[in-house]
Length: 280
Length: 280
Image 1 (cartoon, helix red, strand yellow):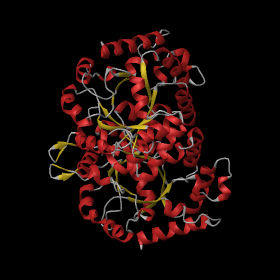
Image 2 (spheres, helix red, strand yellow; image 1 turned 135 degrees about the vertical axis):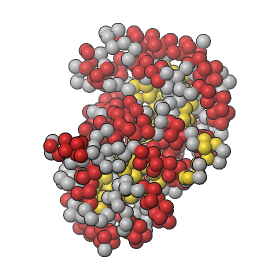
Image 3 (spheres, one colour; image 1 turned 90 degrees about the vertical axis):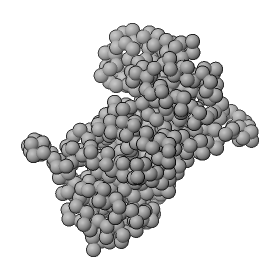
Image 4 (cartoon, chains in turn purple, blue; image 1 turned 90 degrees about the horizontal axis):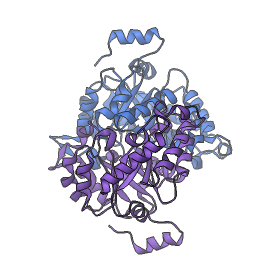
């Protein structure tokens, strides 16, 4: 569904892009690269581990190293919550440091009843200043709605995830269709403001011919390439005729490309290589 | 499934109760009351809103007022994340203030792939010091496992939730059974250390005769009474012959029982009344 002109104009008058326009601008013509910011203390370069704010110091370097190639950054909230209030502060500063024009996705996979979801949406969009959030569909539409009330903010709804247990529930068949297809239909129905996307893992490439027609024109966030082993070639082929923006996420394979002093250069090279593979 | 003696003895030797034993001790003979700590700034008594740490100040008063009747406290993480790092600090302090012997449930409904779930579990169990967490089953068993590795910590898995959208996915039928029944079976299979519970909402009382036999002997966390309108009488009747601990949660109907200067007394009265209704 398209955003209405009136609403777009109102946002533009305020100098704010719609989420849909921001995503399109960030990804350009091909699939875009999303860099997952999942800093684990024990995997950071020795020098940075001594910093008073190691997660932030690391992220600033990674963002600088990869911003030429990245359309989006996706901090995974778990790795910040691990450090409590200090971690949350480094998360806030990380998001503030992302250059203008990139999309920031707060990856928390939140999902709760309406009144709570409203608080989560405010925490992620207003508190952290992220452009989008990942959300879990298990609690249904009223748990997703609070993330979809604003045309300048978006939500990527988990459909089919990249982990082994993804099959436990997501691939159960109901009314002739897997549960993830029910989720995709639910997501399409919620896309009144053009701000709904889907999370679909890259570890099952055989699924693309089935899933992309169902997704129609919803933007995609695709984790699971790189460290999780999903195939880039199959993904690239599948996305060729897909009509909406797709963000391909890599976290560990980029940010930990080297644990030595050359980690910035290694991250930059890994980002460039993946983008080349996706676009060549 | 029972915890093994060897493991219990090992924990007891360290002075640590198993989660199962802690929960039984906290609930005693009947259903236990869980007080949801969901502080919303605009609903706090005027006087506390001026405090430098209003969420914490409010929680300390509520905990003191209700601890005679409560078996457990359940801070909902969304309401703290709303205030960023400052909110997280108040959450940490709130949990530290819960009296010995009560169960603390970090209500974040987390769910992510294994490596991320491990970080969430450490954040909630070690960072915050909670005894249990609520978790979302949509990503399947490897997303739940990291919360179930320690016999002294537990997880309540969302099965059937109390909100209107709960029916969107949870009640779809697959292989002759609703999705929530698949979740309950998955939960039972993961209960190797006796630390798995279920979240089942109280707003559909007709579901109890069907769901309790499926749950067998898993502890229950039951939201949806009070402000969400679930019937207490039907719940009490249903739980009479249930063989495992059940925590009945009320948040708004207790903590906002009055918004005036008498809020402590009102919260205390509301907690006592609900416990009386559940146990009389």
